[in-house]
Image (cartoon, rainbow, N blue to C red; front, top):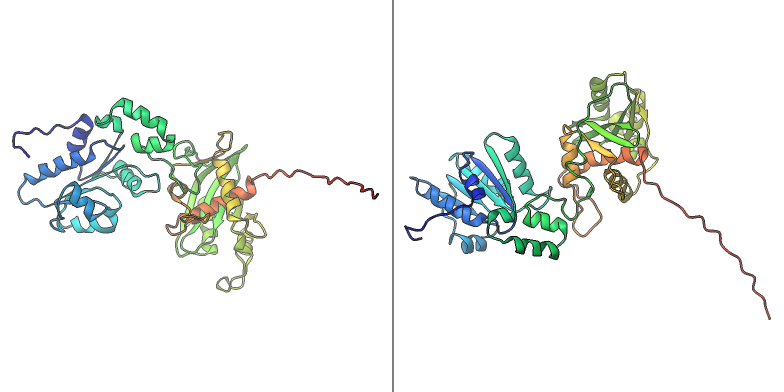
Length: 372
């Protein structure tokens, strides 16, 4: 680089560069100028004494072609991460002893992606800061080109790729959930009954707590207990809500099975003996029916929403945002553990507000056949 060449940053790039936070997360539309910004950042750190700079890309080929011929060392004072997922898998522990600074850059890939998780940390933790800009703000792509792109691709892809927004990504199980429209702060009304969906998985055992107002369901609390059992869940429910409100529980239909670990009792009998009103199906519904029931309440075909979740129910919100289907199947992925709370929601919804199937009565007609 010519020593007289000036480094010029746009206002958004300058805002990121001037941040004093140790961990910076930049999420933007395509062609914003992330690579240029990060190269200038590496140059800035390289002027300081004994600074090792680490550039990380999805593949070695990309790292070589974009910036360096190879990664210099495994110790770093400054790190530029071009794919945010590498952060937790490899890099976080590597910079602990050097207390290095980090700049993460990427385009959003939906709520379930690592970039969203890192972006959220920048909104919540004191050592972190997050930035979000559109392609147009980057100043490298004309307004006319962006308008043309809007005509060529679907609106969800346009918002994600050019406006730098997080969208419900392809393959989401609960695609009708919206992190703004379905999230409403709501306090417990102690004069009304509580409705609790319950999943019996041991690690963790999960329960969603709701109250019903007309045709809307407001989830106001959640219970998560690790390495637990049904007796402990019953005690936790009583400790939290007492015996004053009437409590209805909608458990996994597997609660009818006897278990040797429970002294031959069933989960159903434990719940009933604890004084709860228990409602459950005789057998499991098809998974698709339960998922469709929840999706239809999250947002109906007419655009109306009937499920609202309090911001304090973080596990519930995270699960609805992030659970996806296994690739090329209609089977919800359970690897990340989002299914437990989601299942508890489904057990409640499929009884309280089930899908309504319309059957058309068909009366067969009869014909008389004349023989000649």
